[in-house]
View 1 (cartoon, rainbow, N blue to C red):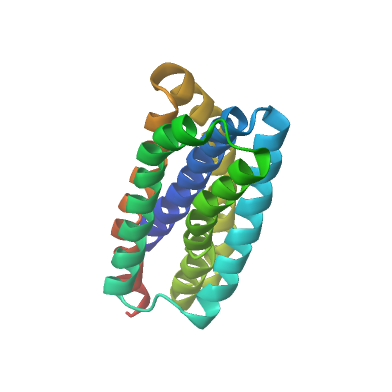
View 2 (view 1 turned 45 degrees about the vertical axis):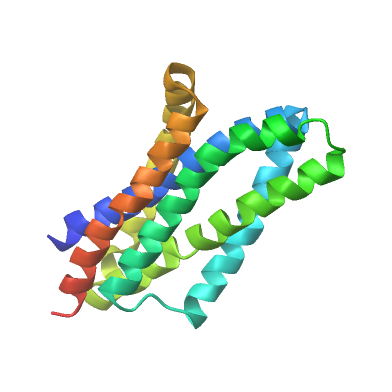
Length: 189
């Protein structure tokens, strides 16, 4: 049970992160007017905000099932709101100067990255309570699913559209509460 729950947890954060990141790169490329801008802005803001979120996970750890569920659902809801907000935001602000559009992108992406930054270190802390020998396995699962998700995100985007892809990322983070609660129950035994 522990290995299944841990594998599911790290697979979901690998999938969810890449679904969100790839979609945001595509959306922001259109909004900022060039793929290089979308790539640079999204990578910069995601890496910075996820790093800060990871750092903050030490100061504000998710210790209870209620905290984990609230975090997971808050993140999923925020990502779903991005899916709904980006279209109207692009329509309203597309004619604004580049600096304004850049600030809007950063303001939209930063909270998502900050919350996503909690996922990996929190999962490692939870799983290491039960067994630190499985850490390389969980790390590998996360990486493997992240690689697969990058290609899968492109396929979903082409087949169903960008909003559907980012909603798939939101679903991954919403579902994260299930294996997280299982892991928290297992790690206390």
